[in-house]
Image 1 (cartoon, rainbow, N blue to C red):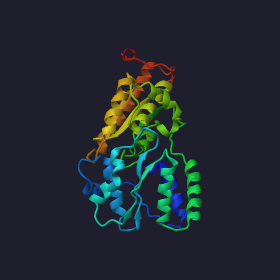
Image 2: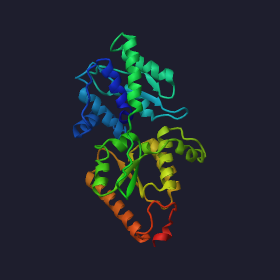
Image 3: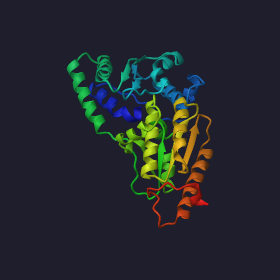
Image 4: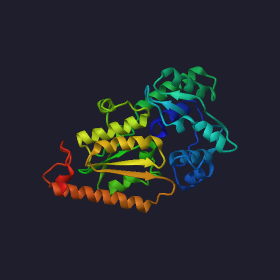
Length: 308
């Protein structure tokens, strides 16, 4: 979630004159530390988070471990996220203070309590805290993490949790790989969330997990609008939420090109490269069979028979 909210945290802490220590971008050393300290059964993003904490624990007085419960009413974040502070405390020795209060992003009082509590750990000047809070909100509102490459006639929709899609070490720099192959990328942040609602309402039951809602809504939007030639779903091996999300999407995609990349700490980059290249080659053959005069974004879902 730092990929979405780090501008808020950075602006808030800077206004309070706190010295901010950033861990390195995810790398092999961070991963090795995470594997060392985290329980084996955890998914790769949680192991990576442990690695980031372990890498900076001796450099700071406070580590921010946001316990984000939910962003939208009735839909919750992964339970591992909700328990991150306890996982960190019980796995990594000799820690400085860490934040532990829960945050419900859809409830202003909850966010207020968390931010003000964080501010009070740095300064007792409440006026300064509220001023920093207001500025942080403005900075966050102007931040845009979305990707929607415009200068490509051929595009892939990258679906999955934000840390899987945007952490270049985790996904082995898939965005750069695709761009180097002449393929553009579009992510869920580039699609208005309002367009997800109708798709979610068509489900038998509203999803309990927010990541399921976003991934499903985004993929269904791509199917309807054809704003991409195919979908690549980046998933962490062992993710319980994705085990539901992927099945829901697979039940709807029909013959629309859909590749699932499941990644853990043992996944080899060469194997991922081969699968991506084969997927793109398949899409190019599909386009050639349709003929260059047919737009890849036309609003018609071709059946398997169209390509025989």
